[in-house]
Image 1 (cartoon, rainbow, N blue to C red):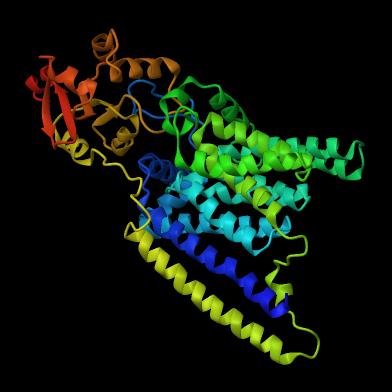
Image 2 (image 1 turned 135 degrees about the horizontal axis):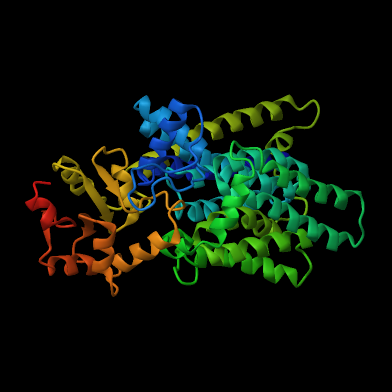
Length: 487
């Protein structure tokens, strides 16, 4: 193949990346997470007090002053600044751009692993589809970029490059504490591969220790690893959708993207084409994805370059800069290469704009923004008196955390609430034996629930409660005794 043709092929991933990036950037602002309500309040607290809170406040009546580890402090502060500037949409676009940057790192990782144009053009859509399952305006999306950088560092066999990525990752999201484990299993694979404790293996283990120390480089210090350890064994995981097993909560991205990629790696292991470090990392991430669907994007980001690069021809060149070099003295070829690059870049920009427009207009399927009971919550805020609110989906209550006369049973922060609160919440929402006793003991006098749900039907049948708002989807149910007292 001539260098001109090589260069032409090398530009194709740029167009594919532009299409995928446009879809991510355009889709992200529409994937609004209800947690943004409490994250904005956290950010405002940081901006006002110049320190992180260590406890939740009196906005909850079930666990006031409970210890709290605000691990999403950086994301929350940036969002609060964007909200002050009325730049919420711009903030959402920026989150999508971060996901697009992670995708660019994936493309580069494929090249580092020896994959060519076909490998890159296969990996990019696969990772994009996996990202669609978790894409939203939230800290987890931002964390994909430092994770991709850690995976890239391991692909280049430069484990110390993972240290700065770990610091950034831990300041964005608590999942950054996984970095030492990733580097550690990679180091174990290098040890098994070398079968001796050589200089490279020593560097791998030293990098593991360095990444472990890097997890402490946040304002939370040792509190972040302690929080991550607590959450890994917390019973609240059973009540949060993204913590459900990929087996129990089947997703398209798992069965038709992640599993085939892992299957390719398993098949390649039979011919010894997959290095031991890659096997260990892939096995760890696959186990994590099986245990929690939130880990599917990370699995795909790491495994897609491994799997797709297996099909690359040994001498296929993927570096655009090197492929653009013409033979010495052939100025017309260099000029032609530059023209083709410019034309392709313009085309990629057009493709990016087209997919961005399509994503904004829902051309890539329905966005994951559920209907929220905003009107029901607003009606409660406007009602006289003080209120003790329980929400059928605890995340809804995040929307009233700033309301001066509303205190909540449970909200989207989740982690600070003790197991006893979660047990009572499950009893009420599931209409289990004793649910009325829980409501009375906790002093709940207002409930927002989805119409037709089991709890909604039970409340309608109870003469002590009455529906004060119904929009056909959500209901606001209040205690008759409070209304009779003028509340």
